[in-house]
Length: 217
Length: 217
Image 1 (cartoon, one colour):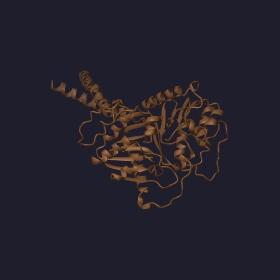
Image 2 (cartoon, chains in turn brown, purple; image 1 turned 180 degrees about the horizontal axis):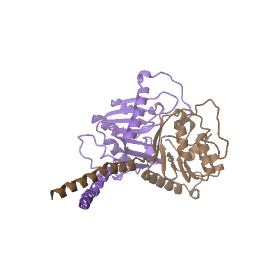
Image 3 (cartoon, chains in turn yellow, green; image 1 turned 45 degrees about the horizontal axis):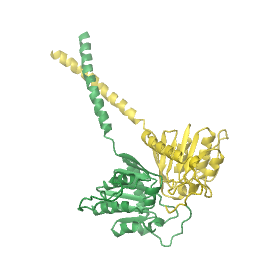
Image 4 (tube, one colour; image 1 turned 30 degrees about the vertical axis):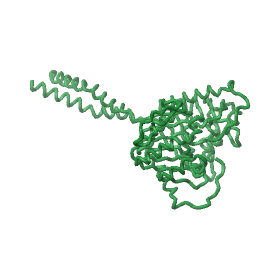
């Protein structure tokens, strides 16, 4: 009986020896961390030509005097340009030429792009909205008294990009701003639901003409 | 030898029997989910009197005609009023009377409140900034060309509240906005670092007078 116990103990010890490996395996599973990044602005002004090359263009050996390193803007561009299937944009103001080029590139690559924006800002000088529409991208906008003040994007129904940043050069280069880039099922689901709700509500079939003027902010 | 193997196997089986319990324990550890909430605006207009009672006041049996249920604004107030030690606010625009009262309540309770804001918006009609200052709360603001456009709060160095929402009644009641409330060490660390960087940079000892005028947005 004593021998049985001893051998059982040995067996147990053996099994326990496997435990660290098991725990390592479990931990490794958790270590495959989904994407999460925080960007702060103002962004250093860097050259983004290499990122924004049209498909088939010769590789850019840009010689301009800007830095060619990473910046908050280049990271934001990378996160967007990772899109392969879909891009939802819900943006109060959109006038940054670099971000506009990135969205047009994605559209050319066959990514399904949909844009929701605020009617007061889309017609301002320098807005990208007209250019996106000309390129054939679907855009919808509000008509009510409140502002469509969101600033978020959803990449491939997998990554949420959200924060305080309006997509304008002023904001990117001069303002204190933050952007979260996060691969998170629950956040993406909630923000996609919000996007679809607004997309349906701003269906042009429901537009009225000469709506009331807006006030304040 | 065969018996040894059998008994070792029995021991192994015994240890493996403990495995589900071990896995349950590991999973339970992961189940104690930290706070994470997403609020969308416009918020339903609800009565927030019960939440904003001064310490020692008789409990409010408010009879007003507003709904007394939960709303995005009441959830935001709850997240703020949970503060026991510190509150950092970094806000482009702050004019909501309810949110102003919440911050003053926290200050009265001995919570260390610090506010960073944008100089262009703090002097507007209805701004809460003057009231907070009068109450003895420390406020610092920018003086440069860019906007201090963040809209985040950090509660007890544990919870980050961030999004597109300026703390104005217009935004709360009329705009499409989002706010994340998230208990996350890494996010809190990064946003606290940003707060301290700006707090130091906006030290009044460094203010210059009659700075350059701002342009655009």
